[in-house]
Every structure is written in structure tokens, then in C-alpha cells.
Amino acid sequence: MSIEEIAAQALAERNERRKNWALYRKLPLEAIEEMLQKPLDPAQRAALLEYLLVLKRQMKANFEKHEKLGDFREKAALPIAISIAFFGAWSMGLGRLPVGWHPWVILGFNTLAAGVWLAVRQSGFHIIAKARDQLAALGKVD
Image 1 (cartoon, rainbow, N blue to C red):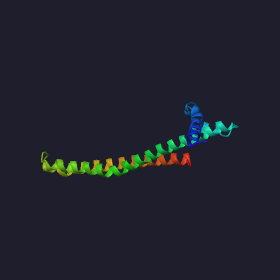
Image 2: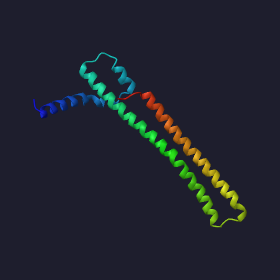
Image 3: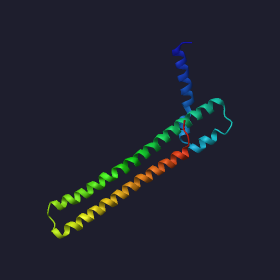
């Protein structure tokens, strides 16, 4: 048997296993895992196992994307806060407000910057925590 024939046979077997994937997509992950506990013929079991592995890999990749998004938010919090504080100091440099207001406006901008920093950091932390919880619930994929 030549390499081309082996490859064609393997591709045909793969396509046969993936024929029912459209039906599996409608089912939740827990239902698919429960189906594996039932007596199935070897072809159905192989198709379910392959689909389950691909589904878990996709879910893991999605959860890791969310974790990176949270990490990005945590890292972006400080530059955003510094920009807000800088804008407050810059606006005082324009000299359009009475001198007596300058310390209060700068204090207000710095307080706003601290609040934004805290809010962005917390949102990033919550995204990371949720993604890690979901990864832990998913378990080992490979």
C-alpha cells in the first residue's frame, strides 16, 4: 500500500468520524462526557473522544485568551492613571483657572486617576480569576 493510499484512507476515516460533529456541537460538554459512559460502538466512541478533545482545546484556548486580556488590563491600569494625572497637571499649566483652584483641581485629577487605576486593576484581576477558575474546572486537556 502506497503512502497516498494510506493518507486517503486515513482522511476518509477522519471525515467519517467528524460527520456527526454538527450534532455534537448542540450538546453541552457534560452531556458528551456522560455519553462516553454509555456503551457505544468503537467508531462512535472514537468520534466522541476526538470531538471532546477538540472542544476542550478550544475552550482552553478561549479561557487563556481571557486570562491574557485580564493581564493586559492590569498592565494598562498604571499608564492610564498616569495619563489622567498628567492631563490634570497639564491643564493647570494652561493658566485658565484662578491660582487658588490649582491644588484642588490637581488633587481631583489625582484622585480620579487613583480610582481609575483601582477599577481597571480590579476588573483585570476578576477576569484572570474567572478564567483560571474555568481552566481548573475544565481540567487537563491533553
